[in-house]
Length: 314
Ligand code: BDR
Ligand code: CA
Image 1 (cartoon, rainbow, N blue to C red):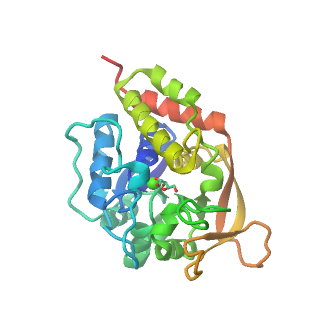
Image 2: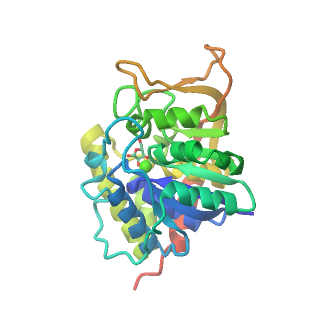
């Protein structure tokens, strides 16, 4: 049976591919797409989710806009990585998929409580919506099977020396999630930096030769240019689909149990996900932490999903 999933995202080049993977893989039943401010403002991330749904033929899945700013601090966007639109690169037409008029948090709550089985949440942006869901609708917890998120790192950050972007944008929200008592899986930079969009991966996408594969290739080409310019990466890491892949097949992403604390007060380390892989602090396990990616199986599923959704070239 496919796993029922809600994706909470901030598209974002890698979020876009996460949506395609979730919608195109038969192991996932995508129930809703909710958006949050992160890579860009929530107006832009919602427009981008609608654009991706339109080009990928994802219809019948509610798209709902959520929080415009983090719980406590002002919003920081990643326009240096994702551009002014949040999804720079391809030319998108006017999207034909529209957002529903309800707030993302209320849509999540409705979908969770109406679905006959517990649902997996896959957040791929700052955790503002998820934290608000857990505090505004505490009955949601009983309907959440697990939270499999992209964010954090067992080691260093990518926005400060210590903090990864999604956690850095809203550390208080991340703290709420990691202390919720729900099963949480953290797919952080230490594992997503194994998902590199190499020229060979790009060539596989291009060979599909569909409208969607061409758009994905253009997105990845733009993403590669910013990762090269900002961090000197030879190939960019496709962070967000790693969390979806963990839901699709847990064997693609190997995890270990650990205690994870979100640092809220450190003068230089706010937003760090302090991951105690060796039980130094003798604190209880509160997360499964992704440590290793089966890259071959990962890319096979991503390419297959793009192929499954893409209309043939005309
Ligand atoms: C995360 O930050 C965003 O820019 C990406 O979409 C990803 O979710 C990686 O740090
Ligand atoms: Ca993201």
